[in-house]
Length: 337
Image 1 (tube, rainbow, N blue to C red):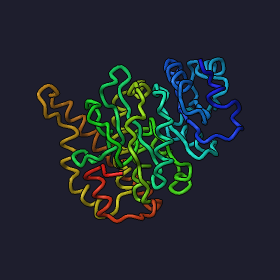
Image 2: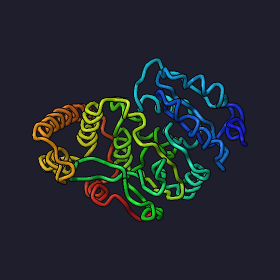
Image 3: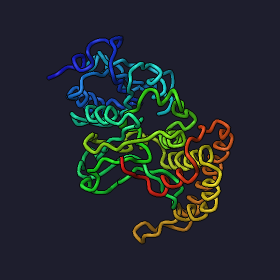
Image 4: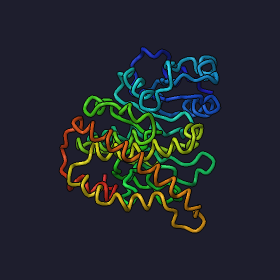
């Protein structure tokens, strides 16, 4: 079996084309699957950097014993996804940076196909993978990102659909950062991930900033990754994750959207409130008191997020595309490569 050292060409100091950055927080149970898949990659010109968010489950010891040539960096505290991947990106000098969740297993051609497609499309800066469910590989987890006006939020494109409908390469609104490839130069232009997000929708924010800057994302259907969805977030209270998700949705919009599009979202907000908090299907019906709690949580989270976004609006990426172009991508989400 090929060793990690062979795949990574030995030492981290040697030049490589790709750095694979893996954030980890108490993910010991997932590391064997993740690292074993990386050992099998056909594309060999890469190194691995694992940013450990102060794990207490022995993750670093496992990496030292089983993946000694992966650079493992221990953070002093759990700063969330954005802090971890930013630390990894800062440690790169490679042409490309791949972000990969620790709860994944990448197919052997995953990295090869992402690199090939960005090499072949120099006007694209991001490549999105076909992410499928780990135990149901015929079902889509994400094929890039799309936008839902009914919820005023970005979401994984194709989530829950059969994978046979997502076999064509095309331009998409953005990538799920759980398995994506970026040109290193993109971060020099639009900046790193916003660390105030902690986790959830930090990639939506980056995708929006890339769109405003006129940068493009390509979906690569044969770059396949199996994903154990929510393996990290389920360790937190559900209400905390809901608050974080809804807060960050509002931050993305108020921080980034052109004024005309933002005003449209404000007008649609009552519908988004209803659509997000009130279960319409009988099999999801709950007690009125539970709906009231969800409404209160949604309003509080979105208010908090809007304040955060407006406070950062002066940092908004300079728009190289017009409001109509932004609206077109929010409405349709895909286009010809």
